Length: 263
Image (cartoon, rainbow, N blue to C red; front, side, top):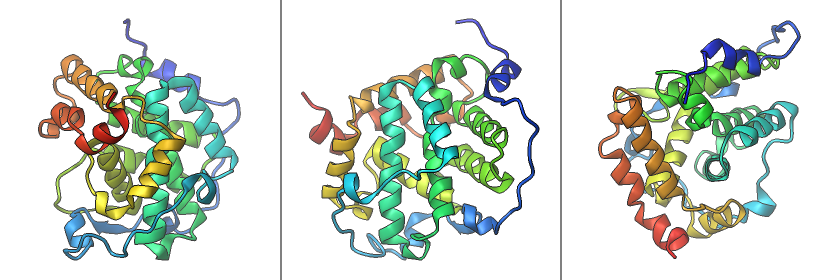
């Protein structure tokens, strides 16, 4: 597939109006506060901070009904195949429940939930062929730039656009050292949950059932493992190579394959 120049992609994301600088709220409202990257440290050696309880996400959780999230969702729908679009929604629902149950001090912060929703919708945007072959950059890095440009061109606050980009840039950083933003931590937890069956103690099986019922997996393990293999083949320097046995881990996601993907 011929390469499309990055500036052509950015032009497609732009709107015909000058960028407006918005009055900023606290950076913490967008998840800009540090938490340990090591989840065991965060959980203080326990399986969870609070015992997960079942949630029917179809009735209890909704994607934020605000214009910027609606615009991001329609953009994602127009670019991503159904498998990736569904995955992007599953990680939102998992994360919304995990925030409410494990980190209740942030459960009523609508700005954090909005920022997290935008992160989910954009985190795999550059896995689309249109973007994968538009650059030699790793998909998560390029996706972060695409998301930030999209949001700033629609007058999102800079802190929100930066928080989304930061989280997308780091969502495949699986090293346990150092710190990370709160949004970055949640998108890491939920993508590892959906892609590898990790951190299952943070959410109830019944909640997972309700999420998959709402947004079916559509053989996601096979779909995403093939994408990772393709990216590594096309871009052997890519960030996906930093995850040990990445293709194998995704392809052998036993918890989800056995329950939701096996014929």
